[in-house]
Length: 423
Image (cartoon, rainbow, N blue to C red; front, top):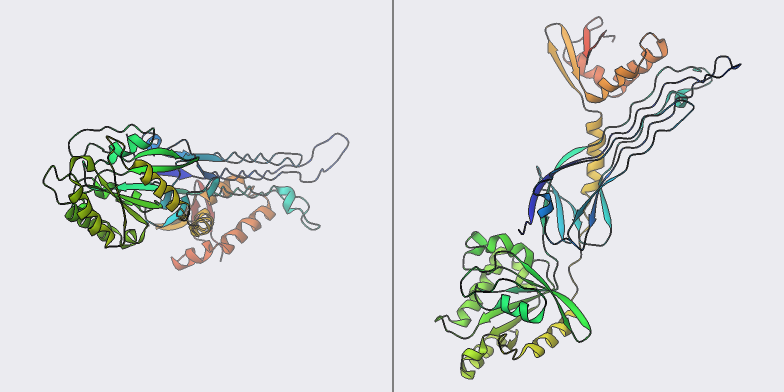
């Protein structure tokens, strides 16, 4: 099944906690602090994979979580950094924030993109030792990672995109000039998903995409067109296939005009793409009818090539023209987006997020990072208590408590820990 739009959840890893430890060795009294720093959490990385052509692998696995960094240890042992989680996607995948719709990355080039960075590891107590604070009994917790809902949208990157009404010969054409084997039948909407084929001609090759047939009103959702018009955006050249046989009583000029109108209504930029017009099934009509349509097309500035996929008439000349035109047309490059920098800022903000609630006479602070911090502190130690108070002041917790009416002596709860507020 061709899948080109999915929603997934990703989370970068938390940093490991710093360690509280003191050197212990025979014959060495009062060993100094030797708690090591925590390791970094794993990043969320997107990597382009040329062997993938759809997003179908995300139909069942929708959550990707990087591992957390390892906590620090004694003897100044630094915790191990967590491995990154690598998510492989096909070329041409757009990654956007599901809630805001903002595009974060365009996976269109070989290589990888680090979307979410893991949290940094926390400092161990050895990091806080000074000449006046020689035995710190506190450490810093690791930074939190970031969890985000993403939308992945595949927009095919092909050299040549076939467009036209259903049943005009697009599938037959791609099956003749490439190894692609689409379903071919004499009824509308035989092709239900884009088909990619590699065309080899005169020591060169290019990718051709058969886009499911458009109909009038496709830009508003009629037929299948609205689902696949987006794939046309990133093709180098559009190959507009028109049935000139008139077997079904259709008017080639009217069909040509109607499809161009749909392209324009979807995105006016599509009409500015290089376009070559193909008159298919020319073996089933008279030369006069073909010449008439040719004059109509060329009068509007388009190159025209009459072909018959059944007899292979005109295919060599068409492929010659495509190779020549592709040689002077650049494939749209993937764009660089600044959203990744914004995500790193968001991770740091959310990593210090807290909410204060008042229930009766108790002020409750709900915060994952503060819960982690209080679990690591020895509150019987005056230096640890001072460090904790400085943290509350530095990150605006005290200010928030005061705004809700807390005064000296008020009871504050963090997780399972209760303490008296001091202004």
